[in-house]
Image (cartoon, rainbow, N blue to C red; front, top):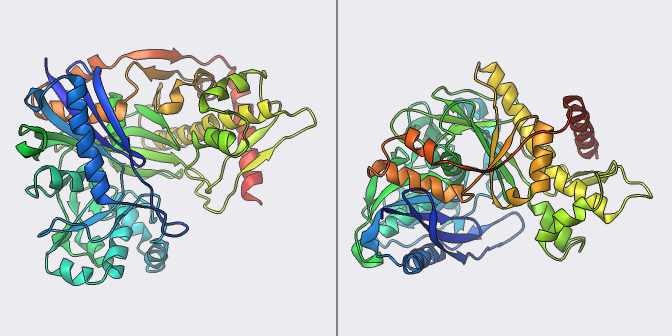
Length: 497
């Protein structure tokens, strides 16, 4: 048997999954990760804990699978994107906690960049909006606020990396300081046209180039794990940021193919082929996971509150005792009874980009019940995702690309049949749930398998992808349009407050 090991380092946990060559899960292990909140708007992780938990799950999963490290052909790494780590090259120790992608402390730097008129330059070179979400401004904050950091960095003594880089450094005992294009593209420092760190952007944020990792394609020989860690030297053959890895795991390799991940938030990516296209509908452009040196791009949109609305029903309203109860409660009524919920608990993401918006529930009558609110909450996930896909479709038409013919889905909430059916009804295209829903880890495994000869090409990976269920639209197009118009009206009410 041929085995591939995926290291999936996420925001809330570190996981390791062993896959066989057919893409089937053999075993998995998971450990929770502590969240550190020094003050409102700040979110941190302990890089040492990231490393310890990830290594522990890798060791555990090999035991669960009943295999040894020598049985593993290659390791793939996928990671929470934008989270920023800086460490000392000599000691290998972090100079500060990791600043997590959710952290907003770098907003003053973003304001300064906009005031300097750099927003358009950054958009054209990186495909990104100027936002504290991305790594570059987090890195600048560390250099400006950790005592002695800037002097060390200018002397070449500090290394920067996203979580994948930090893990590779530790896995190779400091022999490898690298990343892949999909993670580099999330820093606001990487020119996605040249696939190189951009000198003008590094200078704009006052970041020494010596800190930056080497950038490889997502499927490449990054290095080898030192034998003492797992018992054998295993090649690291694939690396990708979590959302690009999920797109790859969903076998979305060509322009017009799209996936949506239904997690705490929702992340929708559409492959746009080898041409860089700028969105005119509130999306960002980024590098896809690239199996070779050939360029590949995506449109991306993020919904801030997806599955988190179900957690709010459970913990905020006490409407349900467990998240699994939401479908039963929502199905106890035929529809939402006119109730609309816009869960803008932390503002609205793409395509609206309104950070000041706050959640609303509208359309309430004396006949409204908690079941109607539960249904409206569940439907809000589909409404937000439909607005994203509509924005992507407009961008695709503008760019002369094929329209999205089906939406592939993954993430925890995709198991909810009511939600998936409503999503298909709103979109008017099939929504397809794969047989293997661990697509983020699977994408990393596939990338590692490509670089080590387990797979010949992406056509072979397309043949491995299998659907578990296809949800076909049952709603008349005019009715779906009416529902989306009601949703947009509810959004307008929300942002008017």
